[in-house]
Image (cartoon, rainbow, N blue to C red; front, side, top):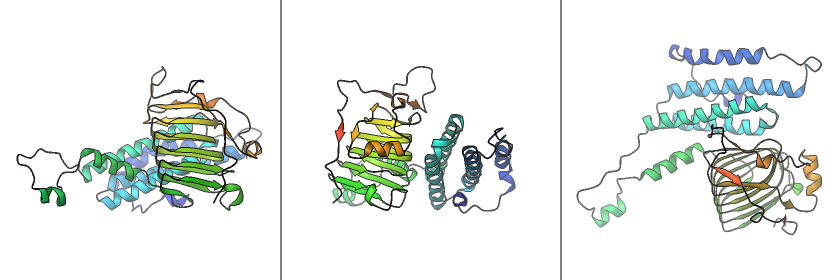
Length: 336
């Protein structure tokens, strides 16, 4: 996974502490004990290889953060963190729970570090009241003050790098349909970004789904054989089946899920969960072939990554039976 070694310059003496901090992790990965009767077990090998690559990519990003001094530096680091995050999402289904949590914490820390350094390199413009009102022409053509909310939105957008490739992007008030059973992308990734007031129907199997900046939409998807990553969604409904689902920055949104592992939320509030309710011709066979044929009940076992207390997180809840959707049949919707 050399793609994550992004434009890193030779290491300076000031960075030796960073490398030393990671040496323990790398040593632990190198010394992983193979299982007695299955030393060549594919899952163990895949986990060890992924964690070693993850640790190397983390080190490279932290070295880049230590040297960052311009906006272009920050942009490259943001892309590297997003690539690392997306790679984790695609491989999370075979990682042990402890390792997954550790990797998620690492990415969260990297994002926080990037934001802190961004504030130092690109300081926020201060809001101030003027003693005299602006002339109409000046106020219209030469705004000098940028609101804190606008700056926060710009920073948030920079952290959410949308992947290239097939997908639906920049749509409003449309019905969007994709059938992966009749296209060449059934083993690839699919992205939905910057959608507002849309209804989306995705039939067939897909390897991975990425959602970003979804507002007031209804999304119904067939089985995802890998992972689903959701960033910055609000006032929407998602019906998803996947091996692993991660949700960041979600507000006032309902999720109807079938998932092999516990769903993970972060920086979210007002989100609710219920069991998967989707139907179309052939979906039962597709779910079985994707390893999602049986209901695990994990839709109700949500991990709130930012809630560390031993009581129920206030950020999520379950949809009551009287509010729960009936089975949604999308058989009649076909790709145009």
